[in-house]
Length: 390
Image 1 (cartoon, one colour):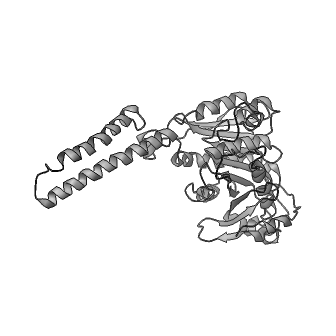
Image 2: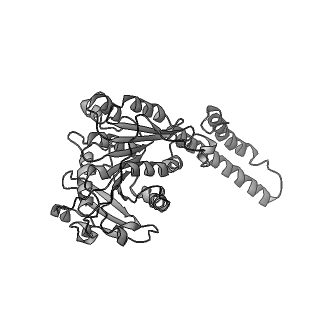
Image 3: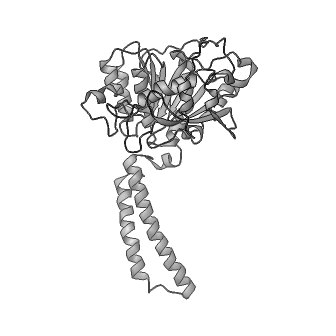
């Protein structure tokens, strides 16, 4: 009987009704001495409560499609498959950047506080109000160990912005998703080049879900992510400022953010990975049929806007709602020079186990599409000095 089957759900409902009834019926009829009767009654009560908790958990799981099957719940989803290219994939040559400077010489590096205890690389953190968007959020930066090695002292590293789901926090990428460990392992094995990871808050309005968009008359989340955060990083760390070295990756809502922002800002980003993300906004501020909704829909952008010179990787599973069909629709809508690749697994729901299973391939794919540059011009952002929270 399947985890999300109607039969199993109905069986649990029967249990929720049956066990309390049995408890009342057998309360004074249980045999044995006092301690035995007490233990039996306690067991019946716990069993009744467990069935109620199980019913609530099943309802939540079925509503949000967190786990689709028993194997999914146990973390056994099988192989993730191979990336399928909707158009011929172009792998750019990686060129080491020259003329970099030490991190502590950059004008806004002092805004960050080092977070100790990171086993792989170094983590820095800041909570700041963006001077352009006026949005306050946290920014977590992870530097690979190569960042401080002499062999890389002139390297200006590529950057991957990481977006969580809704609800969710940037720290999930550095903890539960274990991105620093994944990248470090793959750099050591030669599967990818070192990158700087920037995990960013996207849930900046506690009352609404703005879909990482600039809402007319509302929060300017796209500006926060693409201007404020980007400018902060390029003036704080030894990273490339070229769009060829900037990419994005997100899971769930963050996946939608990554794909749409890449299509909206091809002058700033060259590649993005959407892990189990939609092809349209699903928050409460953008209404279907409106111009603002369409302009923030990845599928609509692919169909109606000038093709952007960006590469997208769309990942998900066949069992996760409409993720697979929406990825196929986006792949079918692609026009050159846009590239849309897909990585769809047959099994798995909408959960962190599935997202972690495609994370290694996603970072390798991004590494193939990101390059560094030798730009050495930095402009200080003094307005950010007054924007640090804390």
